[in-house]
Image 1 (cartoon, each protein chain N blue to C red):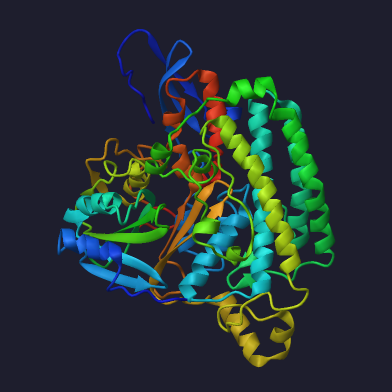
Image 2: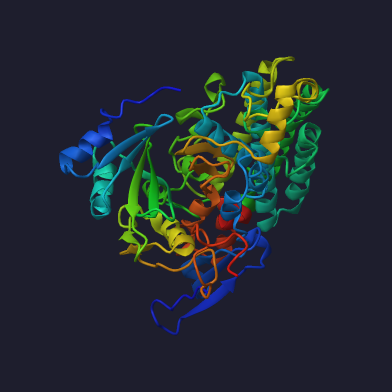
Length: 398
Length: 158
Protein backbone atom coordinates (compact mmCIF):
# COMPACT_ATOMS: atom_id res chain seq x y z
CA UNK A 1 0.00 0.00 0.00
CA UNK A 2 1.39 3.36 -0.96
CA UNK A 3 1.83 5.74 1.88
CA UNK A 4 2.77 9.36 1.88
CA UNK A 5 4.58 10.69 4.91
CA UNK A 6 3.87 14.30 5.68
CA UNK A 7 6.80 16.12 4.15
CA UNK A 8 6.88 19.01 6.52
CA UNK A 9 5.67 17.11 9.54
CA UNK A 10 3.66 20.20 10.37
CA UNK A 11 0.13 20.08 11.70
CA UNK A 12 -0.99 22.24 8.79
CA UNK A 13 -1.15 19.43 6.26
CA UNK A 14 -3.42 16.42 5.99
CA UNK A 15 -3.43 13.45 3.65
CA UNK A 16 -6.48 12.83 1.52
CA UNK A 17 -7.09 9.63 -0.38
CA UNK A 18 -8.68 10.08 -3.80
CA UNK A 19 -9.84 6.91 -5.51
CA UNK A 20 -9.53 4.12 -6.49
CA UNK A 21 -13.32 4.31 -6.75
CA UNK A 22 -13.71 7.90 -7.80
CA UNK A 23 -15.57 8.82 -10.98
CA UNK A 24 -13.02 11.37 -12.14
CA UNK A 25 -10.15 8.89 -12.06
CA UNK A 26 -11.64 7.15 -15.11
CA UNK A 27 -11.23 3.68 -13.74
CA UNK A 28 -9.30 2.62 -10.72
CA UNK A 29 -6.57 5.13 -10.07
CA UNK A 30 -5.72 6.05 -6.53
CA UNK A 31 -4.07 9.37 -5.83
CA UNK A 32 -2.79 10.35 -2.41
CA UNK A 33 -2.81 14.05 -1.85
CA UNK A 34 -1.05 15.92 0.90
CA UNK A 35 -3.09 19.04 1.41
CA UNK A 36 -2.58 22.37 3.04
CA UNK A 37 -6.16 23.56 3.16
CA UNK A 38 -7.26 23.16 -0.43
CA UNK A 39 -3.75 23.33 -1.87
CA UNK A 40 -1.94 20.21 -2.99
CA UNK A 41 1.49 20.08 -1.40
CA UNK A 42 2.40 16.65 -2.68
CA UNK A 43 0.74 14.00 -4.79
CA UNK A 44 1.50 10.33 -5.33
CA UNK A 45 -0.34 7.93 -7.62
CA UNK A 46 -0.97 4.34 -6.73
CA UNK A 47 -1.72 2.02 -9.62
CA UNK A 48 -2.11 -1.69 -10.24
CA UNK A 49 -5.78 -2.16 -9.30
CA UNK A 50 -6.52 -3.41 -12.81
CA UNK A 51 -3.37 -5.49 -13.29
CA UNK A 52 -4.34 -8.59 -15.24
CA UNK A 53 -0.93 -9.90 -16.31
CA UNK A 54 -1.53 -9.46 -20.02
CA UNK A 55 2.19 -9.52 -20.77
CA UNK A 56 2.55 -12.86 -18.99
CA UNK A 57 -0.51 -14.28 -20.72
CA UNK A 58 0.98 -13.39 -24.11
CA UNK A 59 3.88 -15.72 -23.39
CA UNK A 60 1.48 -18.63 -23.13
CA UNK A 61 -0.27 -17.87 -26.43
CA UNK A 62 0.80 -18.16 -30.03
CA UNK A 63 1.59 -14.95 -31.85
CA UNK A 64 -1.85 -14.83 -33.48
CA UNK A 65 -3.76 -15.65 -30.30
CA UNK A 66 -2.12 -12.77 -28.45
CA UNK A 67 -3.93 -10.23 -30.69
CA UNK A 68 -7.12 -10.67 -28.70
CA UNK A 69 -5.30 -9.67 -25.53
CA UNK A 70 -4.09 -6.42 -27.07
CA UNK A 71 -7.70 -5.22 -27.50
CA UNK A 72 -8.03 -5.26 -23.75
CA UNK A 73 -5.12 -2.93 -23.01
CA UNK A 74 -6.32 0.46 -24.13
CA UNK A 75 -9.97 -0.42 -24.50
CA UNK A 76 -10.82 2.99 -25.93
CA UNK A 77 -8.47 2.43 -28.86
CA UNK A 78 -8.40 -1.33 -29.48
CA UNK A 79 -7.49 -0.97 -33.14
CA UNK A 80 -4.40 1.08 -32.30
CA UNK A 81 -3.22 -1.77 -30.08
CA UNK A 82 -4.03 -4.37 -32.74
CA UNK A 83 -2.08 -2.35 -35.27
CA UNK A 84 0.98 -1.84 -33.12
CA UNK A 85 1.19 -5.50 -32.12
CA UNK A 86 0.69 -6.72 -35.70
CA UNK A 87 3.31 -4.29 -37.00
CA UNK A 88 5.76 -5.54 -34.37
CA UNK A 89 5.24 -9.20 -35.28
CA UNK A 90 5.33 -8.37 -39.00
CA UNK A 91 8.63 -6.61 -38.43
CA UNK A 92 9.90 -9.66 -36.58
CA UNK A 93 8.89 -11.84 -39.53
CA UNK A 94 10.01 -9.35 -42.18
CA UNK A 95 6.50 -9.46 -43.66
CA UNK A 96 5.20 -6.91 -46.15
CA UNK A 97 1.47 -6.13 -45.89
CA UNK A 98 -0.53 -5.36 -49.08
CA UNK A 99 -1.29 -1.68 -49.63
CA UNK A 100 -5.03 -2.26 -49.57
CA UNK A 101 -4.80 -3.63 -46.04
CA UNK A 102 -2.46 -0.81 -45.00
CA UNK A 103 -4.93 1.87 -46.11
CA UNK A 104 -7.84 0.18 -44.36
CA UNK A 105 -5.67 0.00 -41.24
CA UNK A 106 -4.87 3.71 -41.44
CA UNK A 107 -8.52 4.60 -41.98
CA UNK A 108 -9.74 2.57 -39.02
CA UNK A 109 -6.99 3.62 -36.62
CA UNK A 110 -7.69 7.26 -37.39
CA UNK A 111 -11.38 6.69 -36.72
CA UNK A 112 -10.24 5.06 -33.47
CA UNK A 113 -8.35 8.21 -32.60
CA UNK A 114 -11.49 10.28 -33.14
CA UNK A 115 -13.59 7.85 -31.08
CA UNK A 116 -11.03 7.86 -28.30
CA UNK A 117 -10.77 11.64 -28.24
CA UNK A 118 -14.56 11.84 -28.16
CA UNK A 119 -14.66 9.71 -25.03
CA UNK A 120 -11.88 11.81 -23.58
CA UNK A 121 -13.67 15.08 -24.34
CA UNK A 122 -17.00 13.84 -23.03
CA UNK A 123 -15.66 12.44 -19.79
CA UNK A 124 -13.33 15.35 -19.21
CA UNK A 125 -16.18 17.80 -19.73
CA UNK A 126 -18.44 15.92 -17.34
CA UNK A 127 -15.64 15.92 -14.74
CA UNK A 128 -15.58 19.69 -14.97
CA UNK A 129 -19.35 20.00 -14.83
CA UNK A 130 -20.43 20.20 -18.49
CA UNK A 131 -22.99 17.43 -18.70
CA UNK A 132 -24.37 17.92 -22.20
CA UNK A 133 -21.04 17.61 -24.03
CA UNK A 134 -20.72 14.10 -22.66
CA UNK A 135 -24.03 13.06 -24.20
CA UNK A 136 -23.18 14.56 -27.59
CA UNK A 137 -19.72 13.01 -27.69
CA UNK A 138 -21.05 9.56 -26.91
CA UNK A 139 -23.77 9.96 -29.55
CA UNK A 140 -21.11 10.57 -32.21
CA UNK A 141 -18.79 7.92 -30.87
CA UNK A 142 -21.56 5.40 -31.35
CA UNK A 143 -21.58 6.19 -35.08
CA UNK A 144 -17.89 5.25 -35.23
CA UNK A 145 -18.54 2.13 -33.16
CA UNK A 146 -21.10 1.08 -35.77
CA UNK A 147 -18.38 1.25 -38.41
CA UNK A 148 -16.11 -0.97 -36.32
CA UNK A 149 -18.98 -3.40 -35.86
CA UNK A 150 -19.56 -3.38 -39.60
CA UNK A 151 -15.94 -4.26 -40.31
CA UNK A 152 -15.18 -6.71 -37.52
CA UNK A 153 -18.47 -7.76 -35.97
CA UNK A 154 -17.51 -6.12 -32.68
CA UNK A 155 -17.91 -2.61 -31.34
CA UNK A 156 -14.91 -2.65 -29.05
CA UNK A 157 -12.86 -5.84 -28.91
CA UNK A 158 -12.33 -5.80 -32.63
CA UNK A 159 -9.17 -7.90 -33.23
CA UNK A 160 -9.70 -6.88 -36.83
CA UNK A 161 -6.05 -6.48 -37.77
CA UNK A 162 -4.23 -9.76 -38.06
CA UNK A 163 -0.61 -10.63 -38.63
CA UNK A 164 -0.09 -10.01 -42.34
CA UNK A 165 -3.25 -8.01 -43.00
CA UNK A 166 -6.91 -7.94 -42.04
CA UNK A 167 -9.25 -10.53 -40.58
CA UNK A 168 -12.02 -10.04 -43.14
CA UNK A 169 -12.71 -8.41 -46.44
CA UNK A 170 -14.12 -4.87 -45.90
CA UNK A 171 -17.91 -5.27 -45.75
CA UNK A 172 -20.21 -4.22 -48.61
CA UNK A 173 -21.33 -0.62 -48.21
CA UNK A 174 -18.44 0.36 -45.97
CA UNK A 175 -17.48 3.32 -48.17
CA UNK A 176 -20.87 5.00 -47.86
CA UNK A 177 -21.01 4.31 -44.13
CA UNK A 178 -17.59 5.83 -43.46
CA UNK A 179 -18.35 8.74 -45.78
CA UNK A 180 -21.52 9.50 -43.83
CA UNK A 181 -19.64 9.63 -40.52
CA UNK A 182 -16.79 11.68 -41.96
CA UNK A 183 -19.29 14.18 -43.37
CA UNK A 184 -21.17 14.34 -40.08
CA UNK A 185 -18.32 14.81 -37.64
CA UNK A 186 -16.71 18.18 -38.55
CA UNK A 187 -20.00 19.98 -37.90
CA UNK A 188 -20.46 18.13 -34.64
CA UNK A 189 -16.93 18.95 -33.50
CA UNK A 190 -17.74 22.62 -34.16
CA UNK A 191 -20.78 22.22 -31.94
CA UNK A 192 -18.62 20.97 -29.05
CA UNK A 193 -16.30 23.87 -29.65
CA UNK A 194 -19.25 26.27 -29.53
CA UNK A 195 -20.14 24.83 -26.14
CA UNK A 196 -16.64 24.90 -24.68
CA UNK A 197 -13.91 26.91 -26.38
CA UNK A 198 -15.24 30.34 -25.37
CA UNK A 199 -17.09 29.11 -22.31
CA UNK A 200 -15.97 31.13 -19.29
CA UNK A 201 -16.36 28.31 -16.81
CA UNK A 202 -14.45 25.92 -19.09
CA UNK A 203 -11.66 28.45 -19.56
CA UNK A 204 -11.57 29.15 -15.84
CA UNK A 205 -11.26 25.48 -15.02
CA UNK A 206 -8.60 24.66 -17.62
CA UNK A 207 -6.52 27.70 -18.60
CA UNK A 208 -3.19 27.99 -16.81
CA UNK A 209 -3.81 24.72 -15.01
CA UNK A 210 -1.56 21.67 -15.04
CA UNK A 211 1.47 23.29 -16.60
CA UNK A 212 4.54 21.25 -17.50
CA UNK A 213 7.55 22.70 -19.29
CA UNK A 214 8.66 21.05 -22.56
CA UNK A 215 12.00 20.13 -20.95
CA UNK A 216 10.27 18.41 -18.06
CA UNK A 217 7.82 16.70 -20.39
CA UNK A 218 10.68 15.21 -22.43
CA UNK A 219 12.74 14.14 -19.45
CA UNK A 220 9.66 12.50 -17.92
CA UNK A 221 9.11 10.65 -21.24
CA UNK A 222 5.73 12.31 -21.80
CA UNK A 223 4.47 11.81 -25.37
CA UNK A 224 1.38 12.39 -27.46
CA UNK A 225 -1.01 15.34 -27.21
CA UNK A 226 0.50 16.31 -23.83
CA UNK A 227 3.92 16.79 -25.40
CA UNK A 228 2.48 18.60 -28.41
CA UNK A 229 0.53 20.95 -26.15
CA UNK A 230 3.92 21.84 -24.61
CA UNK A 231 5.16 23.01 -27.99
CA UNK A 232 7.12 19.94 -29.13
CA UNK A 233 5.93 18.95 -32.60
CA UNK A 234 6.71 15.28 -32.26
CA UNK A 235 4.39 12.75 -33.85
CA UNK A 236 5.51 9.20 -34.66
CA UNK A 237 3.31 9.16 -37.77
CA UNK A 238 5.62 11.86 -39.17
CA UNK A 239 8.90 10.98 -37.45
CA UNK A 240 8.88 7.21 -38.08
CA UNK A 241 6.05 6.58 -40.57
CA UNK A 242 4.46 3.12 -40.48
CA UNK A 243 1.65 1.58 -42.48
CA UNK A 244 2.13 4.10 -45.36
CA UNK A 245 1.55 7.23 -43.24
CA UNK A 246 4.19 8.97 -45.34
CA UNK A 247 1.62 9.06 -48.19
CA UNK A 248 -0.88 11.13 -46.21
CA UNK A 249 -1.05 14.86 -45.76
CA UNK A 250 -1.86 16.19 -42.32
CA UNK A 251 -0.64 18.73 -39.80
CA UNK A 252 0.68 18.14 -36.29
CA UNK A 253 -1.36 20.49 -34.10
CA UNK A 254 0.74 22.07 -31.36
CA UNK A 255 0.26 24.72 -28.68
CA UNK A 256 2.81 26.30 -26.40
CA UNK A 257 0.78 27.05 -23.27
CA UNK A 258 1.09 23.45 -22.01
CA UNK A 259 -1.97 23.71 -19.77
CA UNK A 260 -5.22 21.76 -19.70
CA UNK A 261 -6.79 24.20 -22.15
CA UNK A 262 -3.94 23.76 -24.64
CA UNK A 263 -4.32 19.98 -24.43
CA UNK A 264 -8.01 20.37 -25.13
CA UNK A 265 -7.30 22.51 -28.21
CA UNK A 266 -4.65 20.08 -29.47
CA UNK A 267 -6.97 17.09 -29.17
CA UNK A 268 -9.85 18.86 -30.89
CA UNK A 269 -7.53 19.89 -33.73
CA UNK A 270 -6.24 16.30 -33.92
CA UNK A 271 -9.76 15.00 -34.47
CA UNK A 272 -10.07 17.26 -37.51
CA UNK A 273 -6.68 16.14 -38.81
CA UNK A 274 -7.64 12.50 -38.32
CA UNK A 275 -10.78 13.02 -40.38
CA UNK A 276 -8.60 14.49 -43.13
CA UNK A 277 -6.52 11.30 -43.08
CA UNK A 278 -9.64 9.11 -43.10
CA UNK A 279 -10.87 10.91 -46.23
CA UNK A 280 -7.55 10.39 -47.99
CA UNK A 281 -7.36 6.75 -46.93
CA UNK A 282 -10.90 6.01 -48.14
CA UNK A 283 -10.01 7.32 -51.56
CA UNK A 284 -6.86 5.22 -51.66
CA UNK A 285 -8.41 1.85 -50.75
CA UNK A 286 -8.69 -0.06 -54.04
CA UNK A 287 -12.02 -1.87 -54.55
CA UNK A 288 -10.25 -5.16 -55.26
CA UNK A 289 -7.03 -6.71 -54.14
CA UNK A 290 -5.48 -8.87 -51.46
CA UNK A 291 -6.06 -7.99 -47.81
CA UNK A 292 -3.46 -10.42 -46.50
CA UNK A 293 0.18 -10.98 -47.28
CA UNK A 294 1.10 -14.02 -49.33
CA UNK A 295 3.05 -15.96 -46.72
CA UNK A 296 2.22 -19.67 -46.55
CA UNK A 297 2.63 -21.06 -43.08
CA UNK A 298 2.21 -17.67 -41.42
CA UNK A 299 -0.87 -16.01 -42.86
CA UNK A 300 -3.94 -18.29 -43.11
CA UNK A 301 -5.05 -18.96 -46.69
CA UNK A 302 -8.41 -17.66 -47.89
CA UNK A 303 -11.49 -19.81 -47.28
CA UNK A 304 -11.88 -20.70 -50.94
CA UNK A 305 -8.26 -21.76 -51.27
CA UNK A 306 -8.35 -23.75 -48.06
CA UNK A 307 -11.33 -25.75 -49.34
CA UNK A 308 -9.85 -26.52 -52.73
CA UNK A 309 -6.08 -26.85 -52.31
CA UNK A 310 -4.34 -29.57 -50.35
CA UNK A 311 -1.33 -27.40 -49.43
CA UNK A 312 -3.52 -24.56 -48.22
CA UNK A 313 -5.50 -26.93 -46.02
CA UNK A 314 -2.30 -28.22 -44.44
CA UNK A 315 -1.07 -24.69 -43.76
CA UNK A 316 -4.43 -23.70 -42.34
CA UNK A 317 -4.33 -26.66 -39.99
CA UNK A 318 -0.75 -26.03 -38.93
CA UNK A 319 -1.24 -22.28 -38.36
CA UNK A 320 -4.21 -22.83 -36.07
CA UNK A 321 -2.81 -25.78 -34.14
CA UNK A 322 0.89 -25.01 -33.83
CA UNK A 323 1.20 -21.38 -34.87
CA UNK A 324 4.29 -20.18 -36.66
CA UNK A 325 7.82 -19.59 -35.41
CA UNK A 326 9.51 -16.28 -36.25
CA UNK A 327 13.33 -16.19 -36.28
CA UNK A 328 14.99 -15.44 -32.92
CA UNK A 329 15.41 -11.74 -32.30
CA UNK A 330 13.81 -8.69 -30.74
CA UNK A 331 11.95 -5.77 -32.26
CA UNK A 332 10.46 -2.58 -30.91
CA UNK A 333 7.61 -1.05 -32.85
CA UNK A 334 6.05 2.26 -31.85
CA UNK A 335 2.96 3.96 -33.18
CA UNK A 336 1.20 7.21 -32.36
CA UNK A 337 -1.81 6.03 -30.38
CA UNK A 338 -4.43 8.57 -29.29
CA UNK A 339 -2.52 8.87 -26.01
CA UNK A 340 1.06 9.03 -27.21
CA UNK A 341 3.81 6.60 -28.05
CA UNK A 342 2.41 3.11 -27.91
CA UNK A 343 5.20 0.59 -28.28
CA UNK A 344 5.40 -3.17 -28.46
CA UNK A 345 8.66 -4.87 -27.66
CA UNK A 346 8.45 -8.44 -28.88
CA UNK A 347 11.22 -10.96 -28.31
CA UNK A 348 11.26 -14.30 -30.09
CA UNK A 349 13.33 -17.34 -29.19
CA UNK A 350 12.40 -19.11 -32.41
CA UNK A 351 9.40 -20.96 -30.94
CA UNK A 352 5.71 -20.42 -31.88
CA UNK A 353 5.08 -18.50 -28.66
CA UNK A 354 6.67 -15.15 -27.87
CA UNK A 355 9.49 -15.15 -25.33
CA UNK A 356 8.38 -11.73 -24.17
CA UNK A 357 5.80 -9.17 -25.15
CA UNK A 358 6.17 -5.82 -23.47
CA UNK A 359 3.79 -2.93 -23.91
CA UNK A 360 5.15 0.57 -23.69
CA UNK A 361 1.87 2.09 -22.60
CA UNK A 362 1.58 5.84 -23.14
CA UNK A 363 -0.91 6.26 -20.27
CA UNK A 364 1.43 4.52 -17.83
CA UNK A 365 4.33 6.79 -18.70
CA UNK A 366 2.31 10.00 -18.94
CA UNK A 367 0.59 9.37 -15.60
CA UNK A 368 4.01 9.39 -13.97
CA UNK A 369 4.20 13.14 -14.51
CA UNK A 370 0.92 13.80 -12.65
CA UNK A 371 2.61 15.19 -9.49
CA UNK A 372 4.40 17.72 -11.71
CA UNK A 373 1.03 18.94 -12.97
CA UNK A 374 -0.87 19.15 -9.70
CA UNK A 375 1.58 20.12 -6.97
CA UNK A 376 0.95 23.65 -5.81
CA UNK A 377 -2.54 23.70 -7.34
CA UNK A 378 -5.98 23.35 -5.83
CA UNK A 379 -7.59 19.99 -5.19
CA UNK A 380 -10.27 20.67 -7.84
CA UNK A 381 -7.49 21.06 -10.42
CA UNK A 382 -6.39 17.48 -9.81
CA UNK A 383 -9.57 16.38 -11.58
CA UNK A 384 -8.77 18.58 -14.58
CA UNK A 385 -5.17 17.34 -14.69
CA UNK A 386 -6.06 13.64 -14.46
CA UNK A 387 -8.61 14.32 -17.20
CA UNK A 388 -6.20 15.93 -19.65
CA UNK A 389 -3.54 13.28 -19.03
CA UNK A 390 -6.11 11.02 -20.73
CA UNK A 391 -5.32 7.77 -19.00
CA UNK A 392 -6.89 4.39 -19.64
CA UNK A 393 -6.30 2.19 -16.66
CA UNK A 394 -6.46 -0.99 -18.69
CA UNK A 395 -3.27 0.14 -20.33
CA UNK A 396 -1.67 1.64 -17.23
CA UNK A 397 -2.02 -1.55 -15.21
CA UNK A 398 -1.99 -4.11 -18.02
CA UNK B 1 13.67 -3.47 -45.30
CA UNK B 2 16.90 -1.45 -45.38
CA UNK B 3 19.95 -2.82 -43.68
CA UNK B 4 21.97 -0.64 -41.39
CA UNK B 5 25.74 -0.54 -41.42
CA UNK B 6 26.41 -1.44 -37.83
CA UNK B 7 30.08 -0.50 -37.95
CA UNK B 8 29.29 3.17 -38.59
CA UNK B 9 26.55 4.06 -36.16
CA UNK B 10 27.28 7.56 -34.80
CA UNK B 11 26.16 6.62 -31.30
CA UNK B 12 28.54 3.65 -31.21
CA UNK B 13 31.43 5.79 -32.43
CA UNK B 14 30.73 8.41 -29.76
CA UNK B 15 30.46 5.78 -27.05
CA UNK B 16 33.71 4.12 -28.08
CA UNK B 17 35.46 7.50 -28.17
CA UNK B 18 34.40 7.97 -24.55
CA UNK B 19 35.29 4.50 -23.38
CA UNK B 20 36.54 1.76 -25.72
CA UNK B 21 34.67 -0.85 -23.65
CA UNK B 22 31.33 0.99 -23.67
CA UNK B 23 29.92 -0.68 -26.78
CA UNK B 24 30.80 -4.29 -26.09
CA UNK B 25 28.66 -5.60 -28.94
CA UNK B 26 26.65 -3.99 -31.70
CA UNK B 27 23.73 -6.04 -33.01
CA UNK B 28 21.49 -5.38 -35.95
CA UNK B 29 18.13 -7.02 -36.53
CA UNK B 30 15.38 -5.83 -38.89
CA UNK B 31 17.00 -2.42 -39.21
CA UNK B 32 17.21 -1.83 -35.46
CA UNK B 33 20.53 -1.27 -33.75
CA UNK B 34 21.16 -2.70 -30.30
CA UNK B 35 24.27 -1.73 -28.37
CA UNK B 36 25.27 -4.07 -25.58
CA UNK B 37 26.70 -2.01 -22.73
CA UNK B 38 28.56 -3.49 -19.72
CA UNK B 39 26.43 -2.99 -16.60
CA UNK B 40 29.05 -0.89 -14.79
CA UNK B 41 29.21 1.60 -17.67
CA UNK B 42 25.45 1.96 -18.17
CA UNK B 43 24.89 5.26 -16.40
CA UNK B 44 27.96 6.89 -17.91
CA UNK B 45 26.95 5.72 -21.38
CA UNK B 46 23.40 6.98 -20.86
CA UNK B 47 24.64 10.41 -19.82
CA UNK B 48 26.87 10.60 -22.91
CA UNK B 49 24.05 9.58 -25.21
CA UNK B 50 21.74 12.17 -23.70
CA UNK B 51 24.21 15.06 -23.59
CA UNK B 52 26.32 14.58 -26.71
CA UNK B 53 25.24 17.42 -29.03
CA UNK B 54 25.48 15.18 -32.08
CA UNK B 55 23.18 12.51 -30.56
CA UNK B 56 20.78 14.05 -28.00
CA UNK B 57 18.87 10.97 -26.95
CA UNK B 58 16.68 13.15 -24.79
CA UNK B 59 13.65 10.89 -24.36
CA UNK B 60 13.69 7.49 -22.73
CA UNK B 61 11.01 5.62 -24.65
CA UNK B 62 10.95 2.38 -22.82
CA UNK B 63 12.83 0.22 -20.39
CA UNK B 64 12.03 -3.43 -20.00
CA UNK B 65 13.47 -6.80 -19.21
CA UNK B 66 13.66 -10.19 -20.89
CA UNK B 67 14.27 -13.32 -18.86
CA UNK B 68 16.40 -15.88 -20.72
CA UNK B 69 16.08 -18.52 -18.01
CA UNK B 70 17.77 -21.07 -17.79
CA UNK B 71 20.60 -19.32 -19.68
CA UNK B 72 23.01 -17.12 -17.74
CA UNK B 73 23.22 -14.14 -17.48
CA UNK B 74 19.48 -14.63 -17.48
CA UNK B 75 18.17 -11.06 -17.46
CA UNK B 76 18.48 -8.63 -20.32
CA UNK B 77 17.46 -5.02 -19.85
CA UNK B 78 16.37 -3.42 -23.10
CA UNK B 79 16.34 0.35 -23.08
CA UNK B 80 14.77 2.18 -26.01
CA UNK B 81 16.10 5.67 -26.54
CA UNK B 82 14.65 8.36 -28.76
CA UNK B 83 16.29 11.51 -29.99
CA UNK B 84 13.61 14.06 -30.87
CA UNK B 85 16.05 16.55 -32.48
CA UNK B 86 17.65 13.91 -34.74
CA UNK B 87 14.62 11.68 -35.12
CA UNK B 88 16.56 8.53 -34.32
CA UNK B 89 16.19 5.53 -32.09
CA UNK B 90 18.69 3.32 -30.33
CA UNK B 91 18.40 0.30 -28.09
CA UNK B 92 20.79 -0.29 -25.22
CA UNK B 93 21.08 -3.74 -23.74
CA UNK B 94 22.53 -4.70 -20.41
CA UNK B 95 22.95 -8.33 -19.40
CA UNK B 96 22.34 -9.00 -15.73
CA UNK B 97 23.14 -12.29 -13.99
CA UNK B 98 20.35 -13.94 -12.02
CA UNK B 99 22.03 -14.08 -8.61
CA UNK B 100 21.42 -10.79 -6.78
CA UNK B 101 20.33 -9.19 -10.04
CA UNK B 102 21.02 -5.45 -9.79
CA UNK B 103 21.95 -2.62 -12.10
CA UNK B 104 22.48 1.11 -11.75
CA UNK B 105 19.32 3.18 -11.90
CA UNK B 106 18.77 5.57 -14.81
CA UNK B 107 16.45 7.88 -12.85
CA UNK B 108 19.21 10.51 -12.41
CA UNK B 109 19.60 10.61 -16.20
CA UNK B 110 15.93 10.41 -17.25
CA UNK B 111 13.41 10.91 -14.42
CA UNK B 112 10.91 9.04 -16.60
CA UNK B 113 12.79 5.82 -15.82
CA UNK B 114 11.26 5.83 -12.35
CA UNK B 115 8.09 3.81 -12.96
CA UNK B 116 9.65 1.71 -15.71
CA UNK B 117 12.34 0.50 -13.30
CA UNK B 118 9.80 -0.08 -10.57
CA UNK B 119 7.84 -2.23 -12.99
CA UNK B 120 10.92 -4.32 -13.85
CA UNK B 121 11.71 -4.64 -10.14
CA UNK B 122 8.14 -5.67 -9.41
CA UNK B 123 7.73 -8.24 -12.16
CA UNK B 124 11.31 -9.55 -12.56
CA UNK B 125 12.99 -8.82 -9.24
CA UNK B 126 15.89 -6.91 -10.76
CA UNK B 127 17.09 -4.22 -8.34
CA UNK B 128 18.09 -0.74 -9.43
CA UNK B 129 20.87 0.82 -7.34
CA UNK B 130 20.27 4.47 -6.56
CA UNK B 131 16.55 4.42 -7.44
CA UNK B 132 14.78 6.97 -5.22
CA UNK B 133 11.70 4.86 -4.51
CA UNK B 134 12.15 1.21 -5.44
CA UNK B 135 8.84 -0.39 -4.46
CA UNK B 136 6.42 -2.73 -6.20
CA UNK B 137 4.16 -0.80 -8.54
CA UNK B 138 1.56 -3.08 -10.16
CA UNK B 139 1.35 -5.88 -7.60
CA UNK B 140 0.46 -5.52 -3.92
CA UNK B 141 3.37 -5.04 -1.55
CA UNK B 142 2.90 -8.42 0.14
CA UNK B 143 2.97 -10.34 -3.14
CA UNK B 144 5.51 -13.16 -3.22
CA UNK B 145 7.63 -13.80 -6.29
CA UNK B 146 8.15 -12.03 -9.58
CA UNK B 147 5.58 -13.26 -12.09
CA UNK B 148 7.26 -12.30 -15.35
CA UNK B 149 10.21 -14.58 -14.63
CA UNK B 150 10.17 -17.56 -16.97
CA UNK B 151 10.27 -20.03 -14.07
CA UNK B 152 7.08 -18.56 -12.61
CA UNK B 153 4.13 -20.56 -14.00
CA UNK B 154 1.38 -18.74 -15.87
CA UNK B 155 -1.24 -20.28 -13.58
CA UNK B 156 0.62 -18.99 -10.53
CA UNK B 157 2.67 -20.98 -8.00
CA UNK B 158 1.43 -24.42 -7.01
